[in-house]
Image 1 (spheres, one colour):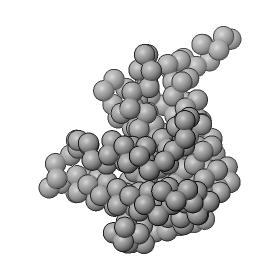
Image 2 (spheres, one colour):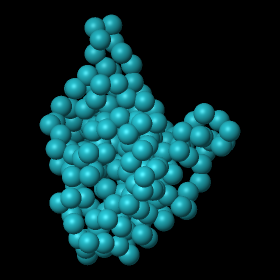
Image 3 (cartoon, helix red, strand yellow):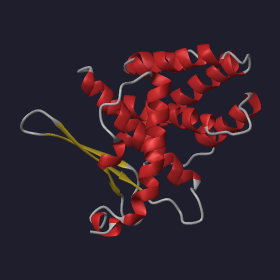
Length: 211
């Protein structure tokens, strides 16, 4: 059976998306010192035309967590920023849920969104080939947290959650930029990122508001 035939159920067009998702997973696990429990590529499916990143979760009868990560297709001419950020967010959600399940800790929707907002900065900062400094961080931070549009109304629960996550992540990243990036204290930066990852919702919010 040909490789294309084997992939017919999941979509040949997802080869690039799976490869990118796998690279993002490796980077996040390296930054946060996480053990590999599951490969994100085994859970990736297409989001469908016009669909956006979604992590679907269901508890099976035996207590196991069943997951499906729906990702948008990357553009043929290259990875658009929006599609790229959606893939990072989806992998962030996957990694966070898997780790919380491993250590038997619950996670809130807001925790997932807040961690994903920070992880976008982490991944994109790490991908810069020509070095990373305060100026580049500030430009990236503005692109991720200031020049944004929301699909959900501000008055809705989901809309409020996304705005709270964006604001807290923005403040937290701005502090990282000021305290660590500007002084080239990258080992301490990684330590602070790991601390943030392992905190729960309230402490994550406090770390953001303290910036």
